[in-house]
Image (cartoon, rainbow, N blue to C red):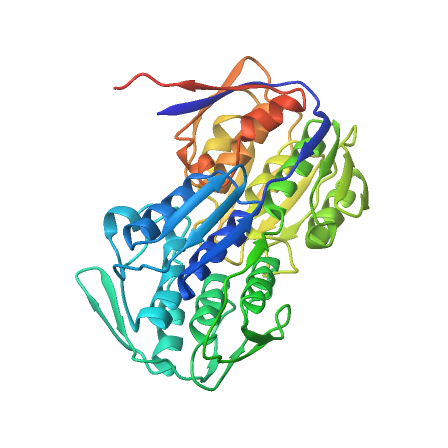
Amino acid sequence: MDKIVIEGGRPLKGAVTISGAKNAALPALAACLLTGGWHRLVRIPRLRDIRTIQRIMADLGTDFREQGGVIEVNSENLTGYEAPYELVKTMRASILLLGPLLARCGRARISLPGGCAIGARPINLHLKALVAMGADIYLDHGYINARAPRLRGADIFFDIPTVTGTENIMMAAVTASGRTILKNAANEPEVQDLARMLRSMGADIEGEGTDTIVIHGVDRLETCEHTVIPDRIEAGTFMIGAAISRGAIVVEGCIPAYLTSLIEKLKQAGADISAEDRRITVRGPDRIQSVDIKTMPYPGFPTDLQAQFMTLMAIADGWSMIRETIFENRFIHVSELRRMGADIEINGGQALVKGKERLLSAPVMATDLRASASLVLAGLVAEGGRTEVHRIYHLDRGYEAIEEKFRGLGAAIWRESEPPL
């Protein structure tokens, strides 16, 4: 198992290019199950989660060809419809295979998913919607079993906006008979990206980017070429890295419009930010100001950047309040930040952060994907020696070559293999 080692104290300087979005690439790969033939997906990041969903799809009979950041996918010769626990247990997003498998094969058997320990992400909203579309679903020994000769359109209301739920039902509905209306749908950029891909395959979809998505089922789909959007969470992590290290960097290959809430909060914290087409320049302040944040569905402040922003607030002037409204257990990184000297108190879904002059290096343990990134950011500014971030397999699920990119910006950061116990 690897660890990340960091010697703090170096301001980030230079330019970094953002990879394709994991949370757009995963549904794009799943959508290739909807019809056979070779699909061409561009800007697919090299991540553990991408490899996991490829392994599951390959186990179902899907073929892959890869070169650089391009993956070609052909599900013409599907031989199965089951995603086993052994593969699914490491990644919650594997539930995205349920909708397209049910639409294509008329049946699906998916293990209840695993993944990060950041709180419940119930899939009942997915299942309730599929039942409304005519699916017969039952749970058996930890598996979701679903059957439907052909799904039918329905009016679906999500009790809460759900990104994977919206994506799953979009994929299920594109070949269903009749019209499907998704109300209180998620409008995240990744949902919009999937809608664009499905439309290029011949789907009849409108309304993505709003809370109401309308899908008219079609009889057949075609193959397509699709370029996934850049990863706004990776971009945001590097932007916070520039601010916390009091550096100056250019974040290239991003979409500034997807990061407006973070840009506003970083400006309030004292950072100098300018945005152009596909580029954001961030200059960190000499004195970081305390700022309150509240995580919200898009276009609000992303829950996936909460841990990183909390690390920034740990060395800001004054007090800040961090309110988490999306996941109930997304403060589990706080205990590790405290090991580095952060002063943070938790009360339910709120964290009160008292900024301190410095953080101190320490060995820390990553508990989930974004917590891993927050600890790397803390290590960039920690004093007193080396910070070691352990269990970085979480980090590898969502950041492509993160230590290489930070090293390219001047950070003293590298990966080491840990000896077996």
